[in-house]
Image 1: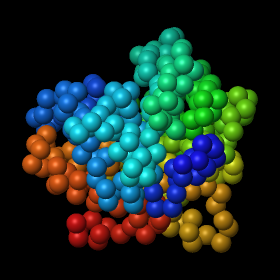
Image 2: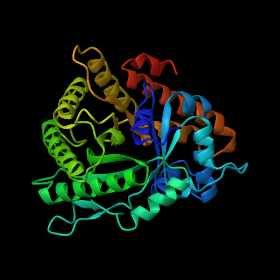
Image 3: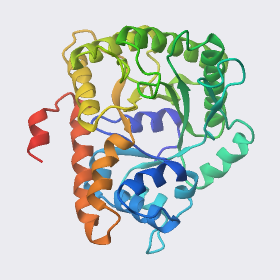
Image 4: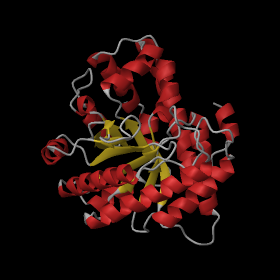
Length: 349
């Protein structure tokens, strides 16, 4: 594998491939294990992720890279092979989540707005992660739409932090995934699709302004945005076609052509809805006479894993069933990244 940032970034958005987000914190994965009545221990978390990474069909054909949690990048499989080596053998690039979480943003909106932390000591942590095999990283900023929110202070502070993180990644030979997420779920998610468009456009313009000021090499990064979509509590939900069209319009207005790829987060969407939206967007792009400058793919966590987690259920005898469920979801999203997914393929599974 080449060590050039531009080559790594292009490999992450290779045609028909996307990124598996397996970087759930210990707290988050415990909640998911609770739902399948499985105790979350270091060994059970390792067994689950080993099941995913040894899904040869999915990893070789549909997964370009995997975002890991600090614990996971250091773990070894039952046979002593590092999980990183298992991924690399399948042709997937190891990545790492490096932020330390979204914390309340000091000020009058602290009960709603957050700032993502983790810049202190990041240079040293990135150097260690590079030695452990990571060649890309992820930092997630969270923007909430509510009455009178977000504030400019929140958008600006998170955009600046994303740019500082991205610059440090590139200094360490690591491709940054820049993830500004406008939430579609949560207690305040009653906004319509037009308000999501406004805030997404504003945020992305701010992010790329900060990336420019930080002299981040746009050819050596990946953008991981939300889709432009109504909040889950909105009275009116937009059609899949409107979500696709407005998302593309927003991206075309804000994302420089130098960025090689955009890997969407799934947010609070169902598995199939996230796949459908991605496929419609790629079908629109593929049918356009004007070439689009970047690749569109997926960087899904729950939307790739939920079916596999349920099929596995924490039981060794269900590993094969879990791998089949994971491979199916990965294949569906691979087709979506090519614009050729069809709902009938879901029913055929």
